[in-house]
Length: 216
Image 1 (spheres, rainbow, N blue to C red):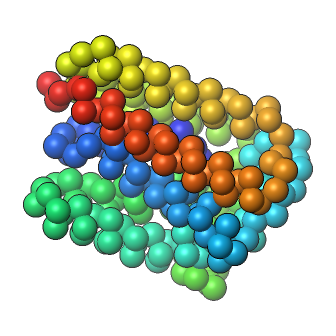
Image 2: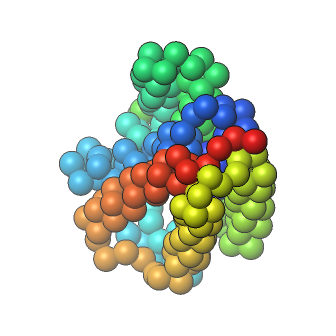
């Protein structure tokens, strides 16, 4: 699951209009913002397993700190709690907590049984990734709906607000498409560095463009 996570962040602007799109994007992708760092530190492990199914080019050997349900509930409490303390915006804090946890729920739908519920516990997953067409239909539908809700609920204040968001949406789609044809990455280090750079770039980009839009 990739653009599906971003879809929830985009749609959530309708529920928490005072919250920056940067935060709303960071929350559902928070597990994937942590995971590259933990890979580089050696705390979590992944194997590169080239496959005809592009979604199975990686085997997630161990990622209990970033991707277990229990860990994401904890990260959600921290993320939403710190935001609430800083802004005093309770609705935004609750939405951010739910978005952090939503990462596990969406991954549960697409992953094969490799997602831990608790660190060291049973691993689960419905395995939608086994069907590339079904995965694409689900993620694209979610992303179109999320983008529509965000664009329909906000309006641009200037050219940055008008074109910055559209550029972000296009880059996210192109990034997603590229994963289908690029083949497996060369190393776990490449995954870690790329994930950190591009993950946080998209968060910063979303926050920047959103500052140039206003809620209708």
